[in-house]
Structure formats: structure tokens, C-alpha cells
Amino acid sequence: MGEPKRHRILMVSDFFYPNFGGVESHIYYLSQCLLKLGHKVVVMTHAYGNRSGVRYMTGGLKVYYVPWKPFLMQNTLPTFYGTLPIIRTILIREQISLVHGHQAFSTLCHEAVMHARTMGYKVVFTDHSLYGFADVGSIHMNKVLQFTLADVSQAICVSHTSKENTVLRSGLPPEKVFVVPNAVDTAMFKPAPERPSGNEIIIVVISRLVYRKGADLLVEVIPEVCRMYPNVRFIVGGDGPKRVRLEEMREKHSLQDRVEMLGAVPHARVLPDDMVVLAEPDPTDMVQAIKKAISILPKIDPQVMHNRMKELYNWHDVAKRTEIVYDRALKCSNQSLLERLSRYLACGAWAGKLFCLVMIIDFLLWRLLQLWKPAEDIEVVPDIVLSHDEDRGML
Image 1 (tube, one colour):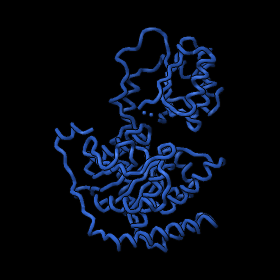
Image 2: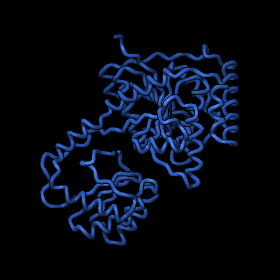
Image 3: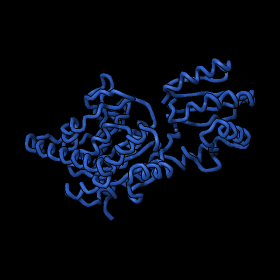
Image 4: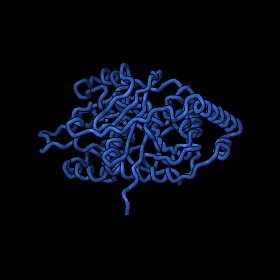
């Protein structure tokens, strides 16, 4: 058998370092493991403060911080066609073979996926979150997702529940959606060699403190658990609009010495049944779940749990599984504009026609760009191979 084919991948999202979060960590660790597997990986995101232009990170990971500023929750303002020239230039300069977009509410991701398909590139999309169906925001987001995924090569979801959610929201055929879970850097999280003395129980909550993550439920759950268990203490890591409510709760119930608010911190997964206690998004059910978790705590061996985590969720395994999705995507047949437009027409009586118009305009603008600046006039940059010492010096 010959050597496995190496790919040239462009990761695109509004969410990346120096911002901290689940999507940012996923892109970074996945990219690092893909680099170790021999692939070329380039990341494209928007500028963060004075961090603009091209930067290199550990392992030679090249990052394009394009000069677009975020306007809401780290998202760039939608331009539809404004990003086409710079995305085309990056794709040609870096000799990209596949574009991998991340996160449903990343404007830059949606635009990059649209332009990449117009130019004939294969596209993979990863959905990292769950969304509803009834509220105005979800209805709008689901229609945008339907447009983006109408012509995507393959899609990835981080859980089976996420896959069901994405398929229902976008109408994407289930056979085009793969489940590849997130992973944990177990080198960063290790149990103490010995159990802490005393009977204090510490419950750690790590999450963005927003409604969608259920942060408002903690306002009712924490006081009740503290009332039931005098030896329980909470550590809450994360920031967001719901932090104010948590701090008000702490003041109201005089829990300053039992609820520690860390603010924004760097990173977390669905585990086997014997490693996790699940609850409905209801304060009463959550209190009962915590009660059950506390009751089984003495039977848990932290080191055994840690070793199982290392085997279950590691980034090298995620990268290998993502490789399979890339291989599938690159084997997808090329289609003409007319063949692709039929997919958009299926998105709705009015939305389908609007989506077709958007794609036709994008196609015409791409053709104009080809005439104005042919691909031969765009300089292809050589791949940079770092020595071990250079790699250690990257930030």
C-alpha cells in the first residue's frame, strides 16, 4: 500500500485564539494533530485587536487574521461578497484542497463555505452546538444553516444528539453527517496523587454563563444544594451575561464563602453511563442528579477515571476520524452551477429562489475576479517546515 494522501486544509471560524472557548480549543488541538499526521493546516479568522495579518503558532500552524472586526459576540458583520477576494487569494496562495468551517453562528464560516463551493472546493462543516426551533433567533439561524449546508460535501457533529439536531434544522441527509466527539487534553487535568483530607465536596461548573448553556438554572440549583449539604462548595468558571444573576444569588443567600466565581477561564463531554449523571434542564431534577453524584463519590477512584478519559477522548483519535471525513469529502463528484442550484431551490418557496440568486451573483463575481486577477498572478507561498528549536519558540 502507498503512503496515505496528505491534505491541505483551511480551517475557518470567527472563533479562535486569543479568544477562549470550546470551538477555539477544538480548532487548535485538531489542527495540531492534523499537522503531526503530515497534513498542511491553515487557519483563517478575523482580527483580534492589534492581532492582524499572518501569525504562526506552535507546530508551524499558520493563522490568517483577516482585517475584519467583530461587531457582536466575536462575529464579524455579514458582507456576503466582501470576503470573496481575500478567501480566494488565501485558497490559491496556500494551495488548499479542502475548506473546513466551524460553528453555525460564525459569519466568516458561512461566507467561506459559500465562496469555496462557488470556486469548486470540497467543504466540510462542523456544528458544535444545539439550537432550538421555535424562537425568532433559532428560526433565523436554522434558515442560514440550511443555506450553508445545502451544498456542503460532508458535515461533522460532536455528538449523536447534535447530529439529530443538525439534520432536523438543516434538512441535510443523515448519511452525510458524521459524529466525531470533542476530546480532552488529559495532560492538563490530572487528579491529585492522594484524596484531599476532610469531607469537603467541591462541585466545579465550567461554562459560558449564557441562557443557552443553562446558567440561569444554577441560580436555583446552587442555594438548594448548599442547603442540603453543608460540606459542599461550588467553583464557577466562565463569563457571560448571566454572571450578574449568579453574583446576585450569592449575595442574596450569603454564599460568598461557598461559591467562588473565577470569571473567564480557558475549557470540557458526554461520558459513559458509569462516569456521568445526567439531568433534565430543570432545577429540581438537577438537584436530584447532584445528590446522586455526591452519594457515589466515595466509590470513585480519580486515577482510574483519568486513565479511562485518556483512552476515550484524545485529540489524535479525533484527528484520525476527521481524516476519514476529509477523504469522503474529496471523493465527492464535482457539479456544475446548475446542478448545485437545484439543492438551494429545495430550501423553500421563497428562500430557495433567494438562495439561488445569492449563489448566481457569487458565481458571477468569482468569474470577474478571475478576469481581473488571474490565479497565475497570485503568488503561491512555499510550505514552511520548522526545526525542533523553532517550533519550541512559537507563540
